[in-house]
Length: 224
Image 1 (cartoon, rainbow, N blue to C red):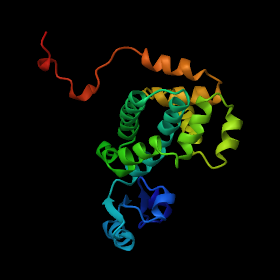
Image 2 (cartoon, rainbow, N blue to C red; image 1 turned 90 degrees about the horizontal axis):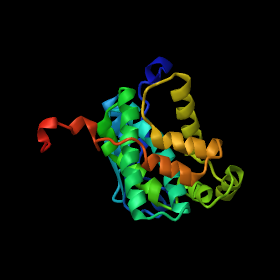
Image 3 (cartoon, rainbow, N blue to C red; image 1 turned 90 degrees about the vertical axis):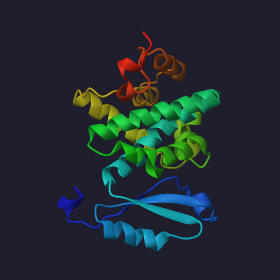
């Protein structure tokens, strides 16, 4: 897409960087992603400082997808917080949310290891836990029983995870794509189909039994 548009030196910046903390010069790390190594490094040099550290990454698609997908998980995290669930719930959601993000990124040919970095795990953690997060705050209002419109008015800022959840849900269903995105599906149903959040959580918890990470399962490791 970037090449077709003629923008060969496009650089994408992503990572856990709430503006409220950057402006206070609190230590922050971010990733500069570009196909052109020189362009990524030029941006790195431009922004590097004693309180703002910049890493480079050639996986532009992975960085962009990570930055979009984590917002959906953050809405889910906010809903759980609004329901007064605890730390165990948040940790489980972040971990399984990252697993879901990995599947999506892998399907689109990007690098799953990118999600182990700042634009994946880093951004996911901060967006799911910080009150600076618009997506989390919106989810909290939904979890408290507010309507979609009431939650939107309460936050009064753009909530990216809402549009992302809708786009992914429509894409999966219109193309009949066999890709497990259970958290995203439940978020969509809660937001757009008036599903009870408690029912959504229950359905996630009672999904069919699975290995934690299918790719690492080796039958020879089990004591049978």
